[in-house]
Length: 452
Image (tube, rainbow, N blue to C red; front, side, top):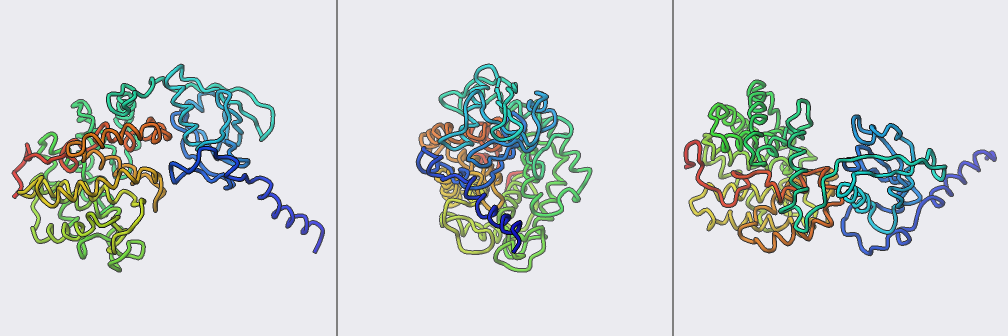
């Protein structure tokens, strides 16, 4: 063995030990509040978007050193003119990351700037330990969160309006399946409806090519129904019916496989049922029925029965399996709460029905699971939208506990900066679905024919 090879092996053995930190020596806050608290021994953890600053950073060793990974075009980070990938951020406003969850600490820095002058002074070096240069990044001033955030909070209202105006821009990222249209329907402001109306015309022009599989039906179809229920625009009814027909045609054994084909009846990853998308397909069918769409009662009852089996028995599984345990469900429990809310609205017993009880039971799962945000099969995102909205289903039956949970969570969930993902973390405030599938209780449809 040559001396060079021996040196390389020695370096490989020694470098990880030299750069990694003992997590006990970094964190002084005690047990992690969130399951996604970065591991202080990991060589790198990526934070894909640092709130309104507009950049991505890697948290590297020694824990936690901030290294710029990318800069968003047109962002405050780019506007500064001095930030580049590869640079090291030593401090922000004179403070280093230390002691607590770095996500929380970074969010606190952003919140402080938004509440004052909007300025973040970054001490930037070209390499770790190198000389630093101060770079000032200016972000919008939004004020401070109120004590009752996100309720009665001018800052939250600004965040919602800013995101609304973004979604209305041509070429805006509307989210998977254009789920952002639901956000526009949620604001309660009629001037936002024109954008949604234009979107429905785009969808209608593309026809069923716009809904190639159950994922898009689940996340994109709901806005069609909600738009009709909000406006009574009968021109969208044929499209609602066509999408419902396609959903029924793709169903197998009470659920849906991943992007239609079904090779098994267990987990979608193996070709079987995939409940992360299938659950909201049920919600779509129930909403479509409220809009007046025609479908066989046997089909709808078979599908609803299939999903009702999991209500109150644990987590909705990934496929046609037994209920799962734990607090990570990828939002499927919240989605099932929406389904049960819709079913309660379509049954004569309404609030006295088993579906109303199942709705509340599944929505309650959202509260203890908030410590597991951004955690799950996809790494998070889907769960946040569904979990947060499900909490809103309990405002009438459990007003005190619901409000206290929203408020007590404000200081912890804001680590993402609500300005970054308002559709997820401000859902309790804006109620993304103001009526229909997420309304509590359902009212008799104001448009279309009453449901049989």
